[in-house]
Length: 306
Ligand code: MN
Ligand code: MN
Image (cartoon, rainbow, N blue to C red; front, side, top):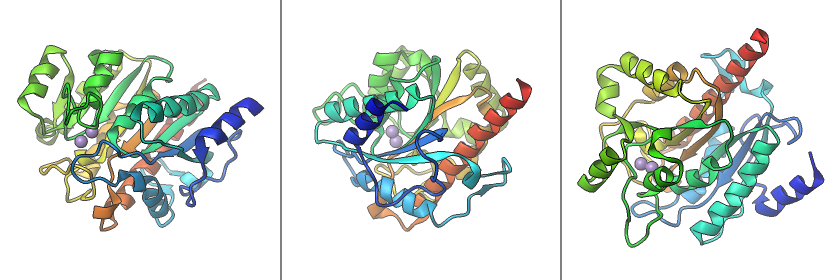
C-alpha cells in the first residue's frame, strides 16, 4: 500500500480500544476493512449511536466465529479493523472525511464494513463505490422526507438525499412500515422501489425472488442495514424503534437468498447502546459476521469457477 494512503487513513481515523472479533490481518493483507463512524448529531428520539462502534465490537468478542450457513470461520477471513472515523460536529465535514476514507479502502480493492452511527453516514459510504451497485437498504422507515426539524439532511431525510444524488432506481428498500403521507407521495412520484414488512412476512420466498431479479440489473450490491428494520423484540436498542418488524432470520434469509451479485460493502447503523440489554449488540455483531462470511463464500466460489 502507498505510504500516502496510510498517512491519509491515520489522519482521518483513530484506533478504537476494541477490535472487531477476528480482525487480525494487516491492512495490506486484508480483504475486508472495518470502520466505525461514531456520529449521531441529527438523532431526534433516542440518541447515542455514536457509542455503537465500540459496543458492537465488544459484543463481537463474546460470540463464536464459525458460520454454519457458509461453513466458514471468521477467524480464517482476512479482516483489518481500521478503528473509527474522526468525526466532527458538522455532518457535511464528517461525510467528506468518510468519503475520503472509504475511497481509499475501495481503491485498495478491499470491502468496507462500516458500523454507525446514524443512518446519514450511508451517504458518505456509497459515493466512492465502483461497479454501479444496487443499494439494498433495510429500514422500518422510508427516511424520505424533504426536510426534518429544520434541516435538509438528517437520519429522517437521508434516503431522499441519496435518491436525489444517485437516482431512486438504484435503491431497493426492504422492511418498510413507518412513514408519513408526504414521504409516501414523494416515494411514489420518484418510483422508489420498496417492499413492506407485511409483504415479506406474507410470502418471503416470493419476495426474495423479486428482489433477486431486481438486483440482476446491477453490477453488484451494497447493503445498508438500519437495525430498526427488525422488530424491537430482536433489536430493542435503536434510535427510532418501530413495532411489528422483521425477525432476524428474515433479514439474513433475504440477504443470502437475493444477493446473487457480489456484495461490495456493508453498513449497519442506528444502534443506540444506552437502551440495550445486550441483545442488539450481539445480534448486530452476528449479522456483520454472517454477511462477511457470505461475501467470502461467494468469492471462494467465483475463484473456483474461474
Ligand atoms: Mn434509517
Ligand atoms: Mn429507520
